[in-house]
Image 1 (cartoon, helix red, strand yellow):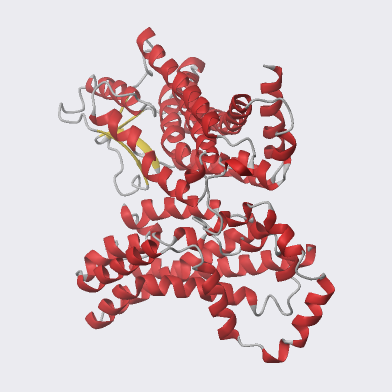
Image 2 (image 1 turned 120 degrees about the horizontal axis):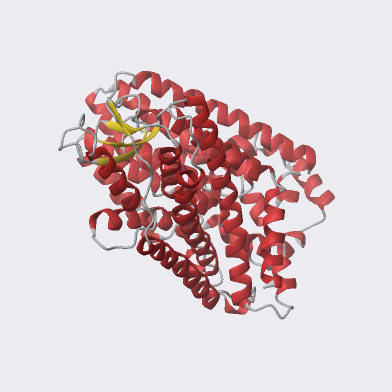
Length: 527
């Protein structure tokens, strides 16, 4: 037990000392603010609960389990990979530490990181109740019990899943990141649609309790029993009634069901230990010469040694300066494009071509709302290598030694990413041009610039493609697929402000380019 605690403590302290952890806590406060202004809200049809301790605790808990279970997975899915990159894993492999102990320690570390975000939301709920002033009495149990029985067990499952994905070769890279997003909704759907199914997110437990309280309000009709938990619709669909909700009545049966969630999380950690290779390269199932995710390719132990053995740094710099008069920007763009497509297999190209044909033959509206978003999700693992390839491959010394990097290699990388978005979405562009839809074509162009700009900026500043894969997948789901206009970068959501939104994405793309330029310059100054 002492060793387990020390593994978790050391990993959590290392994680908490990074700027990224501080940014994460700031993002958590932003979520709390969205609840305060009504942009994230729970309602029973047209009614919401009075802002008392129970209501804020319940809504904050749903915010944690629904949204943080998605974002939090990507935030903590780096504990094992960090040990691989820093070669700490090779040292740990020489100790008597068992695989199970290591996986449990990393699960506990992930849980501590996510629990700190839950603590921020809990404190924010108290502050919100005082500011709103709808209820002066602070009920500590009603406020904290949903966090204790629902949010914490759910985050333990997410923590264990993050370790499981990292320990499973086929799920370790970007493919696992995308797969988790589509698995993320399964517990919510099964809990609400299948009676008796495990309620991981606590949505059924909280919603049924809220509906029972709303039904006791005579101002609400008997038909007002539908529950919804939404983001972004508070201003468009304001509530017209309020009701008093005193919180979930925690019976022994309900508490036992939450203990089952904890047991399930521990079982996942045990399963992760079975797949964990204990940093032994001979146990890796990945075949030499084949890369499933270009962002993960440099994890091989020999990658850095091969690069260092090419030539001394001064010889590389001298050779690059002699070749400078023969520089061709187009050739550099093609080289970057080949590196970008390095991880694409034949099946990937076949699917991309099929989606392109679907854009050509489908009606423009269907192409904008369905086929183009899918086409621009398909290359997410390729875009995720933009800006981070040098760090992941250990080739910063070579790339950063090239002359005029900021005016040559940096824009060539971005242009290669734009060419990929243009190539995968060209079918819809042709249809829009034939139909004379100038506004739709402008929205398409803004999206084609936005995606690689986001990938490059996040790759440069984080040194990894994981953050882009997570954030972009969320934007894709909330924006184009669920038609939130402010995040619909493909322009498929009909709205009077469509032109302003298109211009907004162009401005954001320009800002992201400036951001990535500053990050690349910072890398050169500190190299």
